[in-house]
Amino acid sequence: MSKILKSFLIAITFFSVSTSSAFAEVFYVENDKGRFSMSFPDSWALGHNQKSDDMLTVWAPGTYDHASCKMRVREDRRFVVYPVRYSGEIQRSAYSKDFWFDYLNEYTDPYVAYVTDVGGLGRGFASYAEAFYTTAVGPKVVKQAIMFVSQYHDKTYILECSAEIAAYPKWHKAFLSVAKSIDFKKSISDMKTGHYTRDFLGDGQLIIYGERPFDDTYH
Image 1: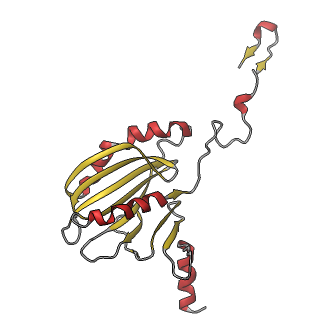
Image 2: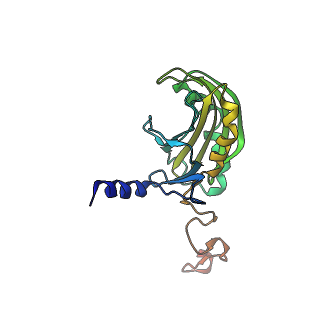
Image 3: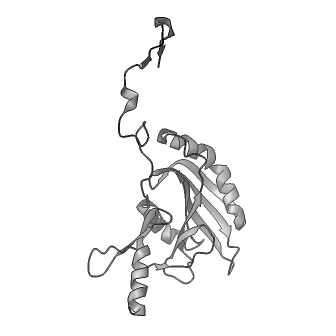
């Protein structure tokens, strides 16, 4: 098998590209390890991940705009025992303002301008934040960013899109489109009975009969 064919087969394992015409307008990427998918304009380019939890990094065109989006995925199994109906409360409790203040500490001179807990990302509830910071790695760039964090099953998904502060308005709508395209592979049930196919909550009263009538127990 030629090296070119091997490279193609390896690439197609990680990325699925959807085209609407002979000239693609959007790239659709599935990340099996992170169990998510994301779409972005075909004029953007895949970049190198810098952090251990970076799963996908894409760069918009424009050398001096420094515009990019990256998806970070972290394992968090603290909430897997809770029914899906508590997802909103979990997000508001564990992934809100305090999370963003801690998250931005990896940058220089961070400033959180706005946080709301009424957002959504993929299949999860999300906190949405707008912030400013100076990059700590590579050339120093003062950036404006929009960020989303969502806890889904055993993973925390963090989408961060940012650009050089003067160029940010040009990319804001594109960043929102990327965020809207995010989806998670379904891994939890939306039913009150979890992954059971039978609705056992609708069963009648269970009676366990004892040796004598007054030994019966009702459940």
